[in-house]
Each structure stands twice: as C-alpha cells, then as structure tokens.
Image (tube, rainbow, N blue to C red; front, side, top):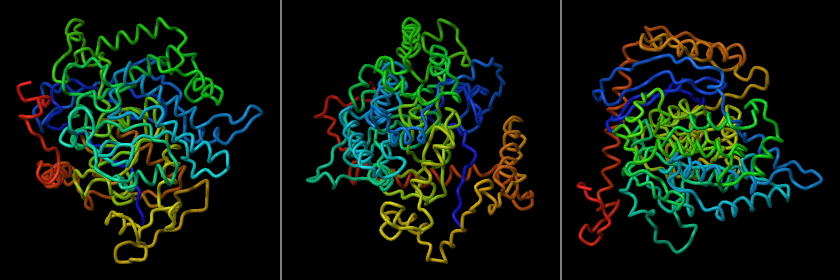
Length: 554
C-alpha cells in the first residue's frame, strides 16, 4: 500500500543559524500566521537551546493577506473563451508572475530566487502552452501554470548545472557551464522533465535554499546576491551572506493598501484586473503611490547593510526587538520555494525534504508543504544531502492546489505511459523504480483501490494516533490543532482513527528520534559531499590566476 505523509515539521537550529533573532509563525488552515515564538539565536548554545514561547495578541487586520491565484482558477480561465477571446492566457499570467518576482527581488529584497529567467524565456514557454490551448489539447491542468524549482534540482537547458546554493558548484557570479554538443544532452532531473515537458508547466526561475539543504532558517546560502539574472545586482546587502526573508510582513502591509478584497471573496474579475494592469514597479496595483513609496523606503532602510549575524544599525538606532522587526525567517532549507509561493510569483514550487525542508518553511509562510513517501518521485537529478532521507516534494498555495499537483505528478494506479505516470521500468532512480514496480510483491504490495465515495474519501484508510506524540514540550495550541486535524480526518474524510499506546511507540523513542536523524543525516552528508573536492567533482580554482576569488581575510 502506498503511504502519503504530511508529518510535523522539524524545528532544529543548525550550526550556522546562530547570530540573529527570528520569529516563528503558527500554522492555521485559513488566514495569516500569528507570530507566537521568538528565538534569540545570539544567546543559544548549539544543540542545547531554550525556546521562549510568547503568545502575541493582534487585531483582525494582522490576519489579513492578499488574495492568491489558485491553479484551478488559472487553468479554468485558460479554457474560458468569451467574445473578446480567451479570458486569460499563460503569457498574461506568467508575465504578471515575472513582475511579482522582480518586484520581490528588487524592491522587497526577498532573495527568493537563485536565478530568475528572462521575460523572453518565460514567454517562449508560455506561448507554446497557449498554442496547445488554442488547439484544444493541453497536456494537463498544470499546462501553462508558472512554477519554480529548487536550486539543488537539475532543470536541463534553463540552468545547466544545479549549485544547491553553494559556490563549490559555481564559478564567480554566474553558474557553471556544461560542455555539450546538443541541448537535449544537458543534465535534467526526472521531476523537472515530468513537470515541464510532460505536464507543460512554465518555469519562472530557480529558488534559493540553504547550502546543500543544510539549514532551517534560510540564512545559510553560500552565494552572493548577484547570482543569476541581473535583476539581483541592485540589492543593498554588504554581507557575503544572502538571507531569504519571509514576505508575510510586507504582504500584510500591501494588503492594507489595496482595495479591500478579502482573500476568500476575490473573484475572477479581481485577478484578471490585477494581471492585466500589472507592472514591474507595481504588480499589486496599489493606487496610493505615496504609501507604496514609503513602504519601499522602509524596506530599504531595514535591509541596508544587513548582516545576518548582527543587529542592523536601524535596529540599534530604534532599539527594535525581534517581535517588532519585519525581517523574519521563512524557514528552510526550501526557503526560496516557500517565499515565491507565498508572494505569488509561483503557483507551485518543487523542492526537496530531508528532515522538514518543505514542511517547515510552508508552516512559516502560510503555504502548504507536501512531502510524499520516500521514493514516490524519482531523485534522479537531485543534489544529494542524505540519500536515504531525501524526498522530492512541493509547496503550493492551498490544499486544493496541492491536491491538483499531486494528481498531476503521481503515478496513477500503476499506469506506466509517458504522459499519465512514472514509468517504473525506465526510471533512472533505483528507489523510485522499486516503489513503482507493483509486480514485485516482496518489495511493494498491490495498492489499495481508491474509495469511490466523494463525500468520504478516506473510508478505507486507518490513521494511527500515537500517544507518545503528546509531549510536555508541545505548546497547547499545537496540541489543540493536532486534535482538530485528527477529528476532521474522521468526521469529514471518514478515516478510522487508531490509538497507538505508549507501549507500542514509546515517548522516549520519540525524544531520541531527532538525535538519531542527525546522526544518520550527517553521516550520509559527509559521504555525499566528499565528492566535491575539486579532483573528482566540484569547483577547480587557480587562486594565483583568479584575482576575483574572495579570501578568508575578505
């Protein structure tokens, strides 16, 4: 039976994450996050730290966010034809997303992208999608949808070599190039081929990440801000480090400047008007130009000369605490994927999850992170961190978008045609090949038939509720949300809840699980990363010849 997991996020602080204060956002199904926890990372001992939880009380306006375009709505508008033609084209939507991306990188200083494709490259993909819609033969519901892919995943001709957020796999400001005689020979991951070629999605850019996936705050990027498209060259950071910032504080401020449409009440007309009037300087269509200019000046002041290991001069001069600073962590390691989806420049972001790298940033950015069972999707073309734990997944804007993405990307009931599902016989990842080879009964049992009932889709599913997960350290509101979620699965989904006593799954085992994870992950990482030694693989430098290589003294 194939298992699908939405597991609690990891909240560990890794070695390079100390040096700044960050706020945690609690997850809720509707509306924005409320900051409920503050880490003072300057005062922590690595591996042993205290979490200071403080419930914050905000008025209703602090829960307001901008309406977010959904995959279902975009695909429906692509198919809608009126007297003036098609209601929305992929070129219109992707151009708007490009405007959001450039605005986020230049003005909001989000640093979500390692590389943003040029507008011509984006529109070239979108025009092919529009032509398929005109002929009435779109590849999937994801056809024409703007998407992003994490920097540790190979995407073929759009980015010849994945660098995993590390200068070890780059040279200078640009990306490493690959000597090849044919465009089809450029290294491409299975997940990128599935998403872009078979499903027809449009790639907007490559998202930032913690270096090699090692980090949970989005501050461990080993690259300069100038990587990729030249839009990133105008940033004000003086530090070599390039933190990725959570967009929710700025989205909240922008939402107060808009016309007042509630996120759940926005209709097609609202989105069409915004898309058609979008500009790179004002993609949110804010009418109060003075308010927008004041906000951008404030952002520049907060981020100017920012060093992630020290308080900014702006913080010192205003004596700001971490609870009032708008510079918040989006989580990691898939920080850029979460930020791009939360801001709206991408409707779906592909990433990887080893110990919470998708689920953690999604919980901090009001998005939905999905980590399927290990081996569900091929890891071929993914830069390895811990091979027995790395899992390809995604971040979407809502549960409905996540469901659509899962249906499009999954292997549907064992079908092995090129368009409808993964071909287990030719899959280039041995783990995924075993996962999808349903005829091998010793390794994989036959999948259970899906329930035909639309009202109770989980009637045939048994869900375990371990009592060991009720830890003393767990904040009360998380325990309540855990219970609410379990009851929702039973009452609405029709699932059968099974209580697992402490005698079966001990709470002591649960407390040791994080330590066991770090032993396994670090051991595998040391093996995988040993290849980047400049002899077998990695950056080969001549320090005497290349004067542009920064030294430790710099």
